[in-house]
Length: 617
Image (tube, rainbow, N blue to C red; front, side, top):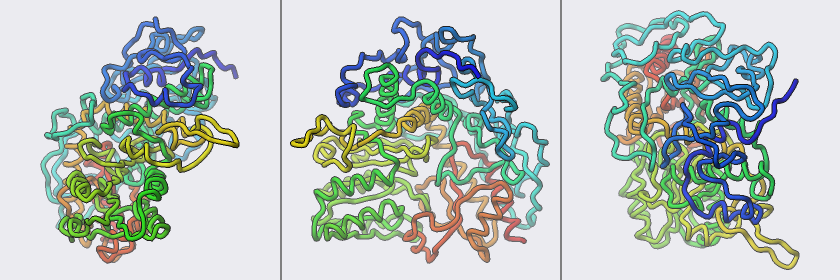
């Protein structure tokens, strides 16, 4: 096997670095090696000449707050000493993107996955040669809405649930194995048609700060996500477990592979070119997160493993210094365990109290009770921006304003919110805001914490080690400024690259269209499930995301999830790390279907039809 020479960064990475990003001192604040590194022009990929003429990269959305993507021409047309770059069909409607020179167009080892076959629309991993006996990738434009799995015969049409109005789509409805027809006396109420191609759908007053507007349809998103085209138990996959994790677009997969193939290095402390490349990508990711959240500066973004680690960081740094005996921490009953347990641990250590804020019968936070519980003893309010089990979207801005009147700080758990609607931490006036990348189409193990700069400046280090120091001796250690102060050791560099690519992908869609489509899809799903006898959906809050937790009379939740899995439908069962919220309804477990922008009405039909079959069995 011969490995071709690669000069500089490959196209996926140079494209990400070709975006203009917010300026600030995050990169400069890194330990000294980064400060001495040569400057990298904003529109030039590291390792390439600043004189290289840029070219627009098709199929890559602009980073929030920037213009078109630019990539050095060498990265598009073939790197020095490399064969010409073949073009591959885009997953977003016919544009083309560059393949990596000298690579196979198939994913190594894909044939070993049962029912997987070749992954549609994926470019090869940079820096590898062809892998024998690996299936080639078909033209992604040949993949319909659900995508046919290469090498598999078409499944017979399962039909639609009786009574459901047809939903116009841009591509053919997914094929599925036949499901026993439900009782025709039970019909799913018809709903207004859900348009999937009109980029002007709906009217949502906000959009992601600085986001670029572009067309959106669920089919456009689906064509970019390879795993949605596989089979599970011989059926096309219907992924309705997005509340647990989202599936990854090929742009994220390729960016992570390209990082390891052409830019892998540790960050901040190296004087060589690859260290500068990796550092530039890492800090570009920080700037992209700041822009995505509407934060004033990248210095207010700390990289963490996810929301859980972010909350623990705040509890063990700010909390230890500011919460004492007799103080109150207000936590609504609908919270995830990761927004309950760290505060219980802090309260036990400091002799404070965790005070639950009750819910109304429809799953909303009782705002009158919340107002009554606030007092001069309240030090912190911890609230989710969207519930992972009820889908409830609380009035966070109003709750924050009220808490601030009492001098309390507010931490917002945004894990379930960021993929569904715009977030602006300045408009919310949140003191802390946390989210996980894997709920946002990015890799696992990476997330971010936003904190107001005066709070970060007051917080002591949580963990000690490399990267978070300026100098160390046995007499005295001095620390780096935030955010590096809270990023001890080697961070999840490839995870940040994947997060950067995920934000870039998401920002390529019209977010008003995405939010409006998801709202209509949720309404469609609510009416479809209402027609299943004995099915009870938990929570009826008027403001909610596409999360539907339910019980099915006479059936254990785990048994329901297992039966759905046999039909290729992936849902979650159990307590969903939200036992107090379920206890509010007298339950200890439930089934949860959670929607994302790539789900379709046809998939909702399949869920409803499968549930009818289970109930009638």
